[in-house]
Image 1: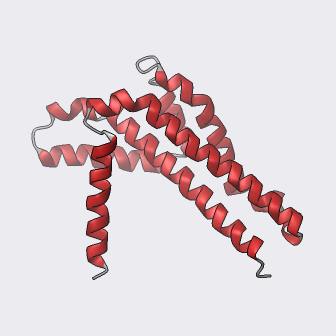
Image 2 (image 1 turned 45 degrees about the horizontal axis):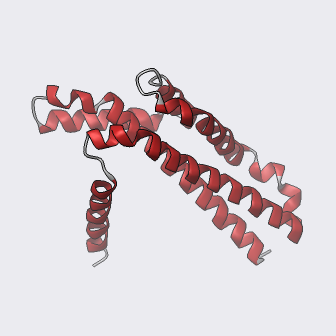
Image 3 (image 1 turned 180 degrees about the vertical axis):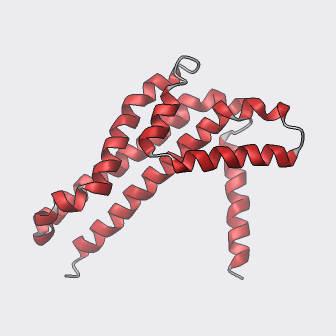
Length: 172
């Protein structure tokens, strides 16, 4: 089978999982601002600071999405804006786990009809809309914290452009 719907399902599944991985990374970034950035002044030198950052991200990326969400929610008393995003993150954890562990099994019979494949595509669209919207809500709710550490939209864009230029230099 090589229908356009089948290709579309694979592409949209990949997009949904890409967006949920971006959201997980986003949570790790926010957690870095909450847990690590306040300790920046206590580091003796740049190497110590980089090790602290690396340790944070190693720990964060070893955790499940659900555990990252739980860690973030622990800071809701200090940052009440987190309370607004937690229900959305809980939905994201459920949807991510469904996609990872149940989607293809639950939709197995859908694969064999045009209508069924279209339903699969719709389900994936709902998933990536949820992940994307939640990431935007997280941005919005944590904007004051990010600005405190000069992690503004323009600063992030500047870092992105540097990374992109570096990546393009590898391609010759």
